[in-house]
Image (cartoon, rainbow, N blue to C red):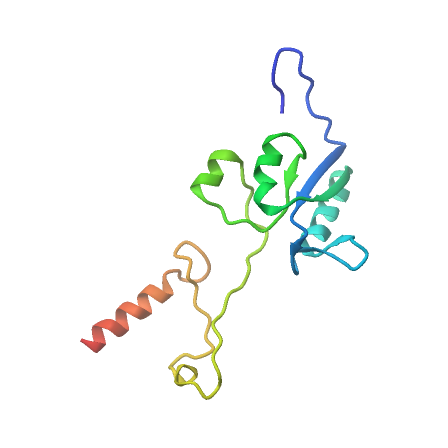
Length: 146
C-alpha cells in the first residue's frame, strides 16, 4: 500500500500474517504455544511459493480487522464469513475452504427415519451442485402436504 508523496512501495519479501490461533482444526496453538493447523500449513506453503519470509502471529478474532487496518500485519488468514460490513473495511480473496455443518440426532429419534436421511444438500443457492436444493425440496413437500 502506498500513501503520501514520499511513501515507498511495500517490500513483499517479508509478510506478516495474522490468524486467530483458537479455531481447530484451521488455526490453533499446540501445547508448546506454536501456531498449527490447516491455515498455518497453507500460509507457509503460499509463502514458500512466493519466496517470501512470512511471520504468522496470533491475534484475537475481534481485533483482527482493526489491527489489519492499523498496519500491524499485512494479511489475515482465518476463517471469516464475508459480510457487507466486513467488505467495507477489508478486501477478501476467493474462499479457500468451507466449514462443513451437519445436524445430528439419536438413531432412535424419528428425524433419523426421514426420507433422504444422510443425503447431502447444498444450502448455498450460488454454490455447489444444483443450488437451492433445500428450497426446492421444502417447496415440493409443502405443496404435497396442502
